[in-house]
Structure formats: C-alpha cells, structure tokens
Amino acid sequence: MITLYTWGTPNGRKISIALEELGLPYEVRTIDITHAQQFTPEFLALNPNHKIPVLVDFDGPDGAPITLSESGAILLYLAEKTGRLLPAAARARYAALQWLMFQMGGIGPMLGQAHHFLRFAPDVIPYAVERYSKEAARLYGVLETRLTDCDWLAGDEYSIADIATFPWIARHDWQGIDLGRYLAVKRWYDAIADRPAVRRGMEVPR
Image 1 (cartoon, rainbow, N blue to C red):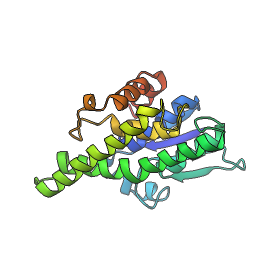
Image 2: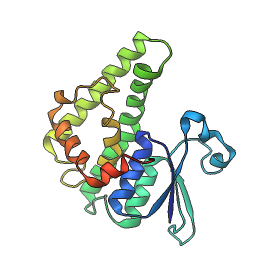
Image 3: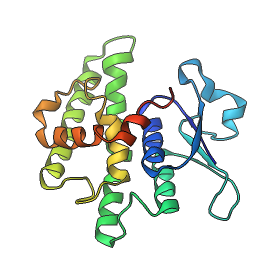
C-alpha cells in the first residue's frame, strides 16, 4: 500500500494523477496547508522541509518502506517502480527528464510566484506583478515552441514530464494567461484534461 500526504495544489496533484494513471492502490492523508498542518511534528518526521506531497510506499525497492518528498523525485520513483510513464529509449528518456527538470526549475517556481503576487499578496507590488506575469508568458512560449513540434513534452510518448506540468497549466487563469493564445499548449492541455485518470487525480484530496 502507498500513502500519499497531499493537498489540492499543483505539486500534490502531480502525484495523485500519476498514481491514478498507474493504477496503484493508495490512501490519502490530507495535509491542510491553509491551517499549517505541514508544520506539525508528525509531518516534520516525514519531511523536514514542511512541504507536500510526501509518499510512503510500504513496499519499497528492497521490500522495506520508503518515504519520499519532492514531487519530481516521487514521479521518477513511481515511473521506475512500474516501468511506465518514462520512455525506455535513451533519447526519449532524456527528453522526458529534461522537460521534467524544466517544470521543476521553471514552471513550478515562476508560476508559483505569479500565483502569489497576482492573487495572494496583501498589497499589489507592480514590479513583482510585471516580472512574474512576463515570465509566465515567456514560459508558456517555451512550451508552445516545444508542443508545436511534438504531441507530448518527451516527444511521441505521454510521460511524467506532462503529468508534472499539467496541474500548473490548469491554473492558467491564476497566472493571467489566455490559453487561446497558445494553440499548441491548449491542444496538449485539452488532451490531458480528457484522460479519466487525470480527472480523478485532479480531485484528490476530495
């Protein structure tokens, strides 16, 4: 059995989508970050960085439990555990890892800042709003270039790179982005949104 400690954020939903796509049985432990549950001693014992998601697999690589944080690492673990959602061919595999790292290093951090300064900051800071709005548009442009030439971020194969990126693009309205301006991204987004496992994963935690 796998236990997923999560909340309804893009990073949390990456893992619930992957678990649904892989058909792995799991239970959900809700960590309400709006009420600081990520700072409890119990959660600290799982992740000293106080961040969701955390995955505990009681059937780890050597048959013993393993606890993992960092959503990118969890996606890699699940892909390697099952032999799915990560291309076997070397070039496609490295493409998937490249675009996974792009999400982890660019899409997540920068769009997260856009969320904060556009929606949650107590005061409007024009410099921050302009900076992160421009960066959000730039990142969408990078995705548009890639997806104009490829069906999926890794190329011809749906992978953990797509799963990692999708929940962030699902909040395009939070970022002030008109998805209709990025036709290749919208085509990709709609194809993923139509997947039953993705719809289930986006509803976790219920």
